[in-house]
Amino acid sequence: MTFNAVDHLHMAHALCLAERGIYTTQPNPRVGCVIAHGEQVVGTGWHQRAGEPHAEVFALREAGEAAHGATAYVTLEPCAHFGRTPPCADALVAAGVARVVIAAEDPFPQVAGNGIAKLRATGVAVESGLLREPARELNIGFFSRIERARPWVRVKLAMSLDGRTALANGESQWITGEAARADVQRWRGRSSAILSGSGTVLADNPRLTAREVEGEGGTPMPPLRVVLDTHLRTSVGSHVLDATAPTLLMHAADAPAALHLAAVERVAIAVHAGHLDLAAVLAELARREVNELHVEAGPTLCGALFAQGLVDELLLYVAPVLLGDQARPLLQLPSLAAMADRWQLKVLDQRALGQDWRLRLRRPAGALAPA
Image: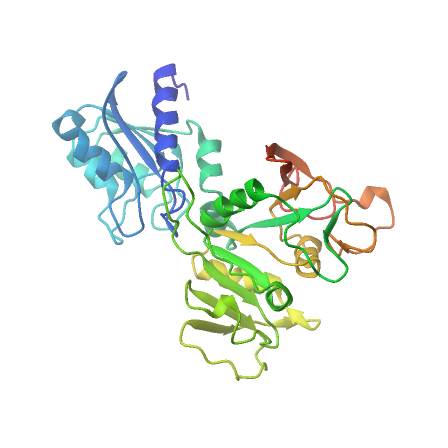
């Protein structure tokens, strides 16, 4: 399918609009829409918050009668069903739009081609695939949840130049500087949930919340705090139990029922080899509409996620300090018998943040696991 320079320009604009909802649309995807006659833009919009109008509705409102005969550029296939809002495909047809260009098809079962079919059935020309990969990347968690039935798992780790995350006594605040810590807040804010283990909660007493992201849309929606706590060891005074954000404790079915807090939900998860079944954890979170899962945990839990091939992306913050060989390691991973068994990663980008560096890494194909 051939798209011209004007098509690319308007779809790139729609993607920029969609990104404005990066902190606020959970569990919905981030979507943008541009309505134009040739080079002239007559309407723009983006999905701002779950339960509120979709991107197409805002763009059509702005365009008014000028939408008739225009082309609509939408970053995700328009919905074709009644959910919390009416079908956007119907709204486009009613407005008299002549052509719809779609970046990515929607895998959600109630849409999945039905939006395209509904538009074409009424005589609207539909073309798809323009800037598909950037559109999927923007909603990588949504696509993961619908297509793989598990969230996109992003693990954040901070280390010294010699690969250490904390002193031998457990002290770890702060390896990195203020700029790196502010960057972490952006990744927390775009996530549906932040996950940690009970060991980290007991040792560091983290809040696991997303603070206001300066200059980027204000305060994010509070991500769900998830603590893997097999035996329910989390103490009542822990910050994660302070009711400032929704909290879920995932534990073994035979864990003691001593912890009863109104602001905290508990759910039993299957146990495998003495530990919570991590695949079952991800399946439960997907059922709860978690798209992107941000993990901040210790070397044992992060290592287990890596070893089981459940990590999709790694955010690695590297500080220009040395902690010595007695300090704690980055990950606990199985021993490898040969160099051919090593974990192979691909650097997506690298960025200086003050005196620190952030690396974004993925396995070249699929989740991170031994190559």
